[in-house]
Amino acid sequence: MFQLTPAEIEAIGLSLRVATVSVFCSLPFGLLVAWLLARKSFIGKSLLNALVHIPLVVPPVVVGYLMLILLGRQGFVGKWLHDSFGITFVFDWKGAVVAAAVVSFPLMVRAIQLSLETVDPRLEEAAGTLGATPVQVFWTITMPIVLPGIITGMTLAFARALGEFGATITFASNIPGETRTLPLALYTATQTPGGDSVAMRLVVISVLLAGVALLISELLARRAHMRIRRGYPQ
Amino acid sequence: MIEIATKHHMRLGNDSFHLDVDLKVPTKDVTALFGPSGAGKTTLINVISGLLKPDSARIIIDGIVLNDTERMIFEPPNKRRIGYVFQDSRLFPHLSVTENLRFGQRFSSPISSGDKITSRRVYDLLRLEPILNRSVHRLSGGEAQRVAIGRALLANPRLLLMDEPLASLDVERKAEILPFLEEIGQLFGIPIIYVSHSLPEIRRLAKWIAVMDTGKIGAFGPIEQITSRIDLAPLTEAPGGGSVLSADVIGHDAKLFLTYLECEHQQLTVPIIKADVGAPVRVQVRPEDITISLAKPSGLSVLNVLAGQVEHMRDIARSPSVDVLLNIGDQETKVSLWAKVTKLAAERLALKQGMMVYALIKSVSIDRTQIGIG
Image 1 (cartoon, rainbow over the protein chains, first blue to last red):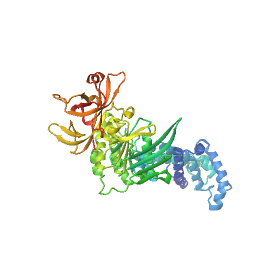
Image 2 (image 1 turned 90 degrees about the vertical axis):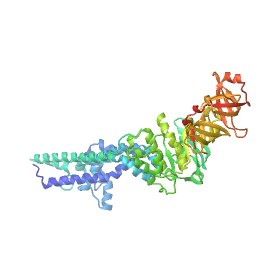
Image 3 (image 1 turned 120 degrees about the vertical axis):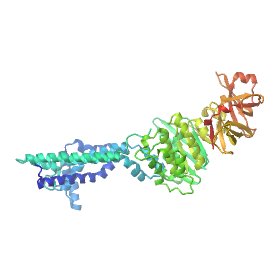
Image 4 (image 1 turned 45 degrees about the vertical axis):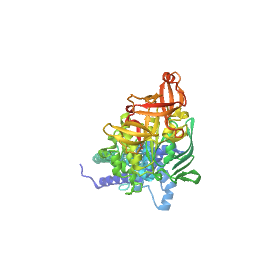
């Protein structure tokens, strides 16, 4: 049963690539937005907050369709990207990356934001009086304390990206080797007569992949946590 | 000289708070910033450290301008080299004790061999060696505060600010840390501004005191002068808290466990302390430990007999006692000592302003915690 076909291997490889690239591309933005939401007060903060969380509450198909309108070849931004840089998202694996990134973004931001909120700004003040510039304070105090939260956020986003279906199929379409990730391959198998055994194999693989991702993140977060147990010396 | 002049207006809900301070503090010794809570003590040292950017300020330490609003100068905290020991130790939870201690050295210019502050001396002074390998989460409150003090010192500061460093500790931990604080100034020669609302602590540690109330400095001067000022009595809790006598060590008697002090050409005998001959000390004397006598006594066990003059008497309403302010120096150098006696005794002795009397103080009534060195 576990003799994988080239098409299945391709789907697994593509899924991993899409999820990985999407997580790392959205990380800088995730950090920035989480920072803004956790630490700054500005006009339009609740608007930004709502905007970030939309993909969490709206059906992914809706998100995919909106992206199609905006980033499709005739779309407002998509046309400009295509004409100026030759970048197209539709029918392209980069489109699957964008879809996965948008849909998993709120999960990443939430985790990082929550962990940023646990960093006591008074620790950063203390580091300042010891001679550290704001940038040095960020790298020596804030970042290490937030690290477990970042790892958690990245894992959640990765798992969500692996499972992304609706936005991908709407926005980037279902093209073998290009945008047919695991869930899309699974969906295709269920639509094919006699595809049950293929579907079953893909289900097992999906569960295994998600399990391994969670396990790795748990180990990483625990290592980072070892030194940052909650609470301060009383 | 540390010059601090600042004005700052803050809104706290419906209240507003006005900080208006003009203060010059010597660049050695411990200066206490004393006042009730809400007086603006922490706000003021936050301005000095740069953690708070005030409406206007001029802060100059030995000619180095740290803040001058008129000239658009505002050095951020990390460039001021001002150590800050917070009420809560604020140790970094993700770093070990050693890494916490060395944190400041990563950023400050390395300590040169000519400097008085070395890791060794700081570790020795604060007894840090046994806890270096401990996790910061496993430190007691007193140990955490010792690490916090060490961390501030090792950043090689030109001034050390301490914001009620003992307030969160119980009495025993306080007694554990006080001797360390006392030695910091002497060993490293760093000026310290010490915020506290505990007068016993201040009497023990500080040479100078700035009394603060509602955002303003009410008085500044040597501690023994300020605590004997009648007009400040409501603020300084004097005479209840007692007076401070400045004295010099003139000798020890190791067999009898006594130290001899000289205060205004008069001898004072106290339980033995660890201080060199010639070292200046401050002795707190509680008003109720003083007996007043009209004649120089004989046949009494009391060792300390100080001649003085009644300077002022204050009746305490609905109480059996009266506060008597004695001057045990001469007319020019006033050295004040508050005594508390019953009204009945004062009547029998016919105590009056200007009378020459003797103040008797039992040596054993003065314990080690009442003597500050340096």
